[in-house]
Image (tube, rainbow, N blue to C red):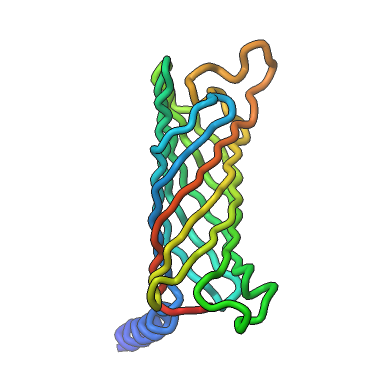
Length: 194
């Protein structure tokens, strides 16, 4: 009997927590460009998806997944990453809400894991990454925003460049790999916290 009561209490608390927090969840999807300085090419082959939770109208957290392909004249490689990031609403941090209506700016930064698959080598180069970026957003209708984003990703111990060549040629240690993503997309927020 006690276990049954405990289960019912747990389910009630879980449903109350879900209903209270559900209104602060957002999802986003984007497509765009990638550029890696080490490879010298720009590709329209970035895609990403994220889900997040805003604690209030200033700060939140999100988990995102992104994939980038690098089609270069002599090689081909694929990069995938998963990141956990802190999100800050810069518009609400620095301005009163009466100063803006449909346009606002989010900043984000965090860490994750990246995986690079060069076509020239039968390997998977796994790295810890640091990501930071800025996302201007424009409200289309309540809850739905048009988003743009510019993010810089740093792979901390990259053994291969994005063109598939080793980073450690004539060097004693692997290097930091840099990747820039510029994208456009949509974000749906289950409650408007601007």
